[in-house]
Image (cartoon, rainbow, N blue to C red; front, side, top):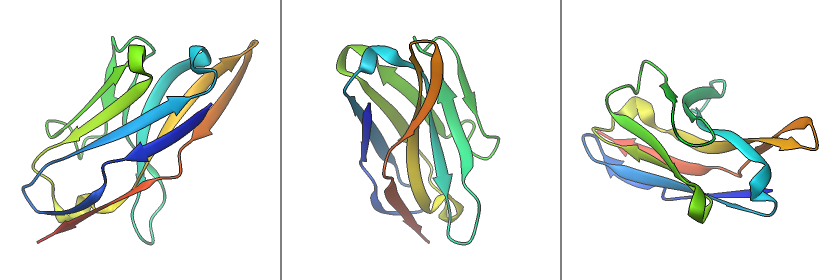
Length: 119
């Protein structure tokens, strides 16, 4: 499985962006997925996760109520709608997929997309 993020860019505080994560390869093995981010000089942190069929989601407290994670399994794509962006949301955003490959669980990461929020 390969993951490719897109949709990052420069936006003013209070603005919105939608990130996409397109999966390819043996996508039938994908289970839960998630978005993570890493700001300069900081550790990578969880932003949001979503279960295999999208029935359950989880958010970091700092983004709850502003970000929405979703997935379109028919098109092998996951999204992150980000509203009311703040300067502290500036980071490289990564998508992650948890795979079940013949009983072995594997994590796959995308290359990241940069989100910059200006004041």
